Image 1: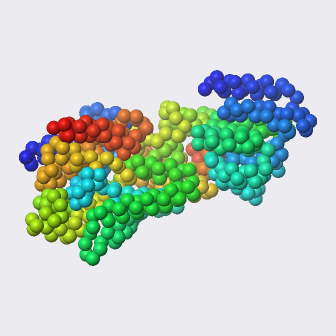
Image 2: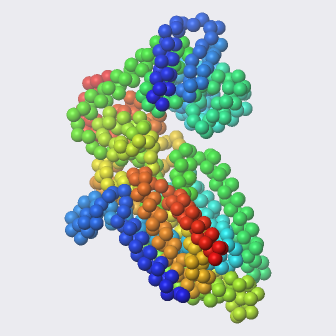
Image 3: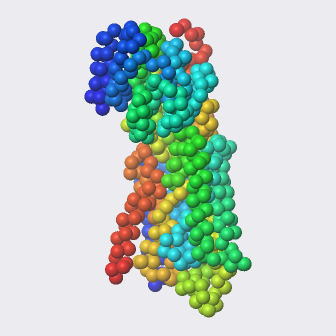
Length: 327
Length: 305
């Protein structure tokens, strides 16, 4: 019962990657795209494929995978069905960092300024929450949750204060940042994200048994031989830093981190040896598809990807939830 | 929509028939740009202008001395900076507004500002919504503000002058090739100009062609791919000194090298403080835009004006 879900989600990812490359505001036929890629001559189609669609599709896959993986880990460690990548203040910290860069015009310095300031904001939030929740070498998950929610409120207040004083254009930019956007992700950012995501994935798969034990409760896990504190620490940093990386690259994209792991669980069960890779692939596929829809449906306007994920995904998930409980 | 404009224009045409040399004490009646009926017992002498374009018109009419306070966005002419600010143009601080005991407050409209407009009206202050999104709006408001400040003649002359300036720019660019233009309002995400903005007309007048002139919105958010497939030859980059908002350099944005304008380095900077305000400096703005699109015009002798 591990192979089948993996094959299905892997196939889904392949299909969505193809769709992501083929569809877009510029309505090129498959022949046009082949011609552009392999025909050897320069032209808008080639430039659009190479500098816009490829990086965008790859970025969507990596961000989706990061968020789903982060959500899976948080749900296991916090044993809370509401746990998602942004629960512990990462989103609010990153949003404050991004808004600071936008409002003070730091974004002119270079294309990496915005992701870097968002990352700094997220890291500050992670540090603060960790510092509060760590008491005598132990990480209390209840304190972690409360500290996360409360520091989120603080960062949001700081963000609102900043935006109140900002110009209209900055306000607009910052607002759209909070709706998520996969446009304008450079290969350099993609590389950084991949270099962080792939080892995180491998470590998570290696710790799947411990996460299985932890989701039964900390005492049970300890009695089963899991080193509870070290796994919790590792899980907290892996999941938080994945969320931080995703949010700095693409802004706030909701729903994926919460719902993809739940959907996989409802469909195929809660064994983390299956859950982790399946959520990883599923998150990637879902975000690639959502982004393809976002940039195509209302073309030439672009619907923020965070809106698409919630709009299409939530009804789907509610149906799944109903079916899962009826069973 | 069209009907309401027709109504406003009709109402103005009617009011224009009545003698404008009203003695002090005569009531002034008119309809503002959201259809509210305004009644003023006397011509306003203590105006708070929260609409920067309207402030510029008042100064241009020689009625700047009737303004007692401004919004924090008002910055032209420089003399207006000496006046106290009552805050944002939308949702201004009611206490600060009242403290200046104005007899008329010029305000931007829209849902965001409705409560403030209603509150001022309830407090007995004439809250007048001014909407200037098109050249017709500009003409109507120049004439309205002229009439309200007993400078109707000056208002008509100002509008004639602006029409002349705009026509001169049109003449200047006539017959020139019209490069396709991407107008870079904000990034990220990419915001540009659509058919419903006067800037779309201004680009045509200035001898260019807005690549998003087919989108029926004032300021749409567009995807990079949608820009790339339209292959803009020139990227117009408005930069504001007053707002502090500076979108990053287009040449450094990931993927933007797919645009011919960026690849060929055809990025032209214009003054956003001048272009993004439809007011008495619009002729100047049109000329600046024409020079940005067609730098070769700068070498021609200026025989017009």
